[in-house]
Image 1: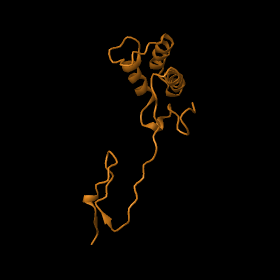
Image 2: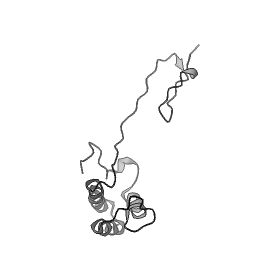
Image 3: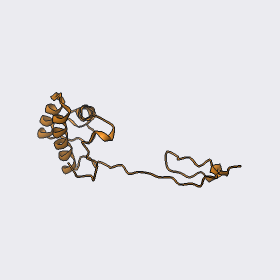
Image 4: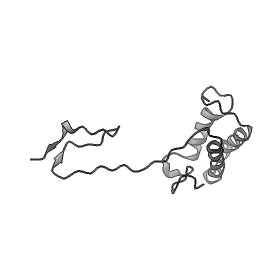
Length: 114
């Protein structure tokens, strides 16, 4: 699945296993579930999801998860973001310039090293 650039949505480099993603989908996107906030209902998706959860082999499950995520993208249920690298540059003699979680720059905390 190459829809989002060089890292596939079904690539384990994203930090979760395909089984963890399948369990998340069961909770959030299966038809009629309480946490299905978008109200997504698709019988093909539910069938594929049931099959994906029952597969023990990660490589075989990865194929099913790719199909599930394609269905979700095609039907507009979710917009899956991709992650990009965030860089911060500073001179060696500047101190107090740490990366803020919301990418804010707190210039009042900057100083020059002695």
